[in-house]
Image 1: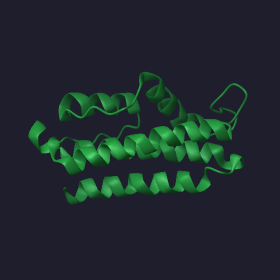
Image 2 (image 1 turned 90 degrees about the vertical axis):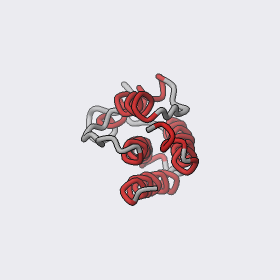
Image 3 (image 1 turned 180 degrees about the vertical axis):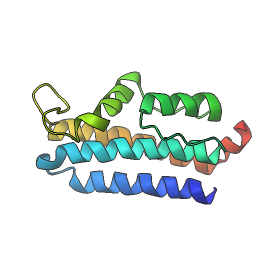
Length: 138
């Protein structure tokens, strides 16, 4: 695995670790959600890096996942609904008055749902990168 790929994966792991550490506290559920989105974004960028593809300065999970599928032949366990959820979270949980839901910030239960998606995606990316399949796709 390339050094830059490992750096992206390590940053994703740190976001995942932060989300896991904060998950029990509903007061910071929006921060958990943000770290989950960041984990998935950085994991997808790790795949692009390892596949010798340009890593764009974008945050959209839909767009990054499409690139990972079409250009790196990496198919991750992300549903359309989960990608929508992660894309919405990037802005919504960071600024006052926006909130993730019409009623405000996410609940602890919703943060736990994000955490499950981030954990599953991180593990799938890590397995893909360690399998060497990405080298075969080039």
